[in-house]
Length: 246
Ligand code: NAP
Image (cartoon, rainbow, N blue to C red; front, side):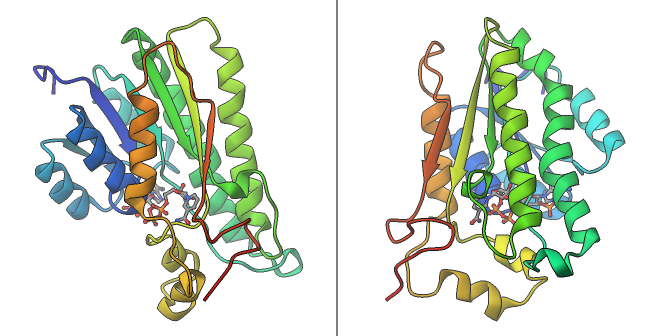
């Protein structure tokens, strides 16, 4: 890793979906990409494809994050993407294990990874932290409180950094996607493919590649240009609760 001439970009949750597409896109744009996630077989295959580096990472485990960060000597870009949803039960039936996982992965995971890597990003002279939150960071919906509360908190954490690091050589961009067809819904509904497919039925959702290209655009702006937040949705989606389906 040390002898690579390419600048380094770190992508968490790079074993599938938005993270995988982002890793591939940033590699195509000239970055050496460090890919982090738990499923090492998938991660290693993607890393090999793009001449990147696969590192085991569980953002819910502080020791794992410490070991991950210690392996990365220099980096310019961090994409906080690891996370997701579990369950969609109303608050009256809230499953605390679901809530705990969503807060650990989306909120504390982003906190840990960002905290560990910010000094390295700033030392590059042109650091950039991009956090993939969601439209769930600005909306609420019935059955979604575990996820929306976690994404609201992740967003607050990310936006606070913009102020705390003002004047330092680091940019902060929040990416807020609407519906993207990935493994997200399969994970949310515990492998129930019919329920997951129903989320995207009758409309054209965003692809992971659509989001990756937007991330790449933000990263490739000149150093003085900070895209603070980018909301992107399918044309057929108005909000978290309203979409046009054929
Ligand atoms: P996905 O295909 O399920 O990808 C989730 C990624 O996160 C996987 O690579 C997974 O890898 C990783 N991950 C999960 N827990 C982790 C942990 N503890 N440590 C490290 N990595 C972990 O879903 P996706 O749609 O691409 O989701 C990516 C991000 O986009 C998430 O933050 C999600 O909330 C957000 N988002 C998704 C949508 C959507 O509609 N799909 C919309 C808005 C925002 P391993 O399982 O291998 O660890």
